[in-house]
Figure 1 (cartoon, one colour):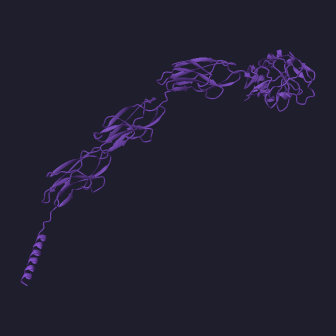
Figure 2 (cartoon, helix red, strand yellow):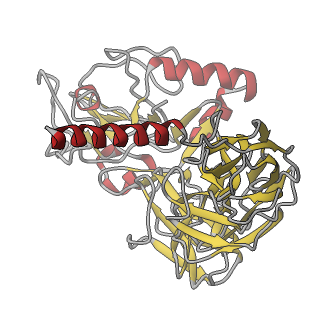
Figure 3 (cartoon, rainbow, N blue to C red):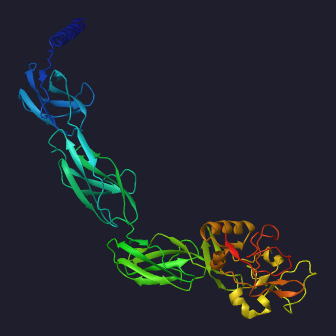
Length: 494
């Protein structure tokens, strides 16, 4: 019983000691401090500090500044740390972004916990980066650069330059060229780029906190080909023309060969056999092209070849005078007003597709009773007359669907003759002048039954208006039987 009482007494005494101990535990106070105004603000740094008014009765174990881009920064944000017991302190805050707003306050830690000073806010100095328009763009090089302006000293810019790529928004991860540091203007030379390629370029400025970029500018490298023009054709004849080239710039690559190339098709190239080498280097060069086809339309271009390839001048088209038929006969032509006429009578023995136009044996054979005679004859039945007088054709041969005139030409129509007559009345006064212009020699004609008539005296020519016609100009052509043989003139298609 006595032992039990003693045990109860010991428990009671222990409880009393614990109560006294807890009741007497000391409550520690937090430090009291202020935050100074922010000063010396740059694009990436600022200076700020604080003052410890009271340490709260215990040692300050750590103090400094904390900041963030949101309000009420804490020691879990970015911060500086001091382990000394200075009552006043000042820190340089680094790693800031240009043109950004920050919140900052001082802090101190003692046994009472973490306490904060008043909150201040500030905005870092802004930055402007512009990319220079690329210049001196060549085949494998260009010049670019930029301008960096800031509200501060620019000393926080640790690197600047340009970056370039074929991609829309180049970065330093693409191709880049450094150009020192700090703000201001700078220029760089870009090398080792591809010809005939479009590049995008922009300036950059790098801080400890990151890289900022300017606007994008674009440029396209050259192809290195010479610059040249094709000169206008001159002295055009039935079979020749004078033409050349003027090479004004070799783009820094020597022109090893220049000349002209031509074809009856569009955009002739040096792969054709129809070319003339005129020389080398730059300058003006002229030559004559021979052995052309009369009445044909040609496309011609000058060319210049250097180590980067072959450049061509502008394409020029011209048509040789005269006309050539399927037999290879070459005719003189004459331009009268808006029309181009054969200045000689047609001589062909074949249609334009190559089929033979028949004749009669003998030449005076009676064809009066034939229903569809398609024939041609030499005037007066003598082949020696053809070179000067042409041939005589029946109406059926004239209008055959295979075509008696060369491609690009048609049998003269009544409307063609009326247009010609009206022009002559106004400009040549007499039909004799027209006859002279057309060299309308009297080849006579051939009647279907009785043979040749009027050679050396008379002229008879077909004109077409859906049927054979009296075309109202009987001194040059007139109405006759459709199986008669008359001369024929072709007119160039409009």
